[in-house]
Image (cartoon, rainbow, N blue to C red):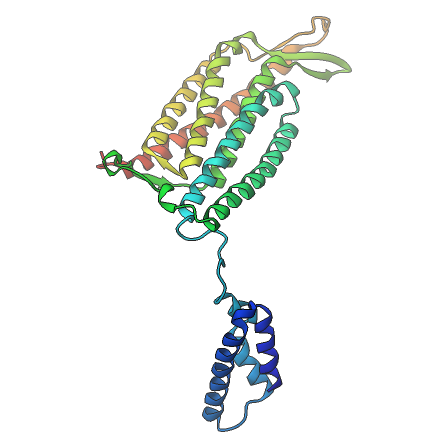
Length: 320
């Protein structure tokens, strides 16, 4: 049958010369056996459509040929666990370095959102480069027969019991980290900047009250440690007892800072003294209300995080 002959010719095209004859003969016999068996069941010759259906069921010639070829996996099963771990570590190192190097530029530039987008676009470009190179290294290690035992060498007596962990979404945690980095950049930029506004055709410069300086380093410390905790969770791929306790401590510290901010005598001051006719008393309550709303939202987020972390801590009850 011409259809069978075409199928076998295609199969041969995907095979090396030393395998073509044997594989063709094997599959030719198998295909004709299946055709004859089907014809006996139907008690008639197969139609062209039925012949095609049987050949499709056998599989594409390229897939069939792959069963007889070596090296059909880029990274073999014995190497894959070590490859996956190496890839995770390499990407996390690059991610951390990128953030640490880019943060001063984001703060000094002032265009926080634009700078952050550029930074993360650069990160993904670098991550692809890391992925390609780590994959190439492990591919060459496997092809040149690097002894896999060196990848998994360990001493049983040095093993320590690991703490239980809760799974998490790395994607969500990366976005949480992005938010923290932007918040850190915005916070450092905000204290040194002045807002220019127009009221009744007059321009005024508004800046934060000097009392904000009292929480400058404490906010930086909390946001920085929270970002580091996120990096730890991303590296682990899960939440551990340590990351949860760290998160709870940082949430409590955030609540304390918010309380301190709420006690400020005023949140902003007018830097331009030329505005003698401007009635600042009319706009000050409006700004105070908005700042208090923002503080209340941040407080609610922290309290929700505390509640969620407390629930998750039950997972570790009885494991220590």
